[in-house]
Length: 253
Length: 381
Image (cartoon, rainbow over all chains, first blue to last red; front, side):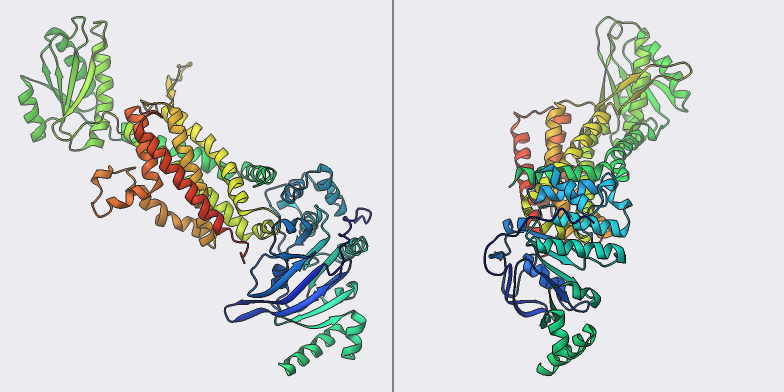
């Protein structure tokens, strides 16, 4: 995966790239997201770590304005979400691939470029180049392998060079080689100023993030760098640390 | 609303359908096959034996026709008897000893073109339509041998009810409307459901695309295919392209040859408005459905009652009084009534009834588009 084509630099606006203030979402009696507040600085990679069903996806959808918050507020680049126009500055790679199987890879990227208002024909080609799919550009998406579809999904998420990028479990079903390529690309984006939020339930990816947010039962139970979290939990294993913080959260509750 | 985003959505929808062979077949071929079969059944199906009585007031030329008709009908297992006057023919019709009475008027073969009257009892319109089809051909070919220079006109009268020379003329416009409505709904409903369940709608809602733009893009995309479908279906229904006999192959004609009294352009506009409404209806109902099967399950719930209550098969006046107030609230009712006016009565854009139906159809399309846009919530899950 080529590192040369990094996304555009983030806006130089001071203050956090992403802000959650008392964000909550309930589905019936289930509190999917339960009073979460944080500020995320620009140009860093944040890892949302937690088991399936802990509320990571709902949190991302709240930050994107894709679902209505029961209470609280989400802000991206200083704009309160939901904001349709602000979505042009945000990239989102969903857990499902979210690409059209009946379209070719190239058609998919060009379609999403157009929805983001990108008129430059080179943008779609650049995005395909980043994920090394240029030679499959004319292939129907349905005929691509699982890993290729993940790459296409990423290309569609970065085709408009957004300063903020949400990646929901981007490496699920991705082979180790491609996973390394993905992470080095994410790092290059962050270096150019892009703020990245990655959700994962794989703890061994955690150390590639600048900061970790442990999510459990809709709450952020711990936040810090991998080193800080290990030190506070008194263990070298992030899994052990997660269990310890989970226990602490239960004691407090 | 951004022109570029709508154009991108339009292109995408077209690309998707273009590659979907089964859907294209459903859209373009199925209506032709079904209308063809229906026409075939209505016109030729019964191939009944005709027992005719002839009242000959024309003397010698009438005898010639009677003789020719007798041999052609008896070859199909029927019979021809000569009766003295119309009154005895009518009593024969009433008691069922004959199925058709043919009255050949005085003056036939004398250079003028008098009208031959064909009488049936009118109690079984579809059965009689089948008889009349073959009878008319036999009569015309018999009359042409007289060489009077003019083919006689044939008028159909019935003892009871009002006659209809070709059932298909009445049914075809209604069927054209119904098929467009049905297939456009089905295709949009299923494609939009795939968009909802396949995760692409969620992805699309994370872009600056507005809900109205999605509905507009879909309407344009499916509208294009509906236009092609309507053009194809109308050509098929109205057309009668004669293919001359080549070698051992007999001559035949392509198309159902349904007579249209009005302009096909007016009919085209009516059907297009109906199709635009069907796109939005498909999008809206796909928000209630969870699987593709459920989109199909809406057909007996939403489309079949419309089919029954909008005058496609049964005249509105024959629907029970209790159900009649529903008809004006069904888009299909207005499309069918407008199409019949065009096909049978030859009405154009200047007819107030057509204008009203077009206005109502446009209103329905706008209403469905609004609820379709509202059904595309960003809050999907």
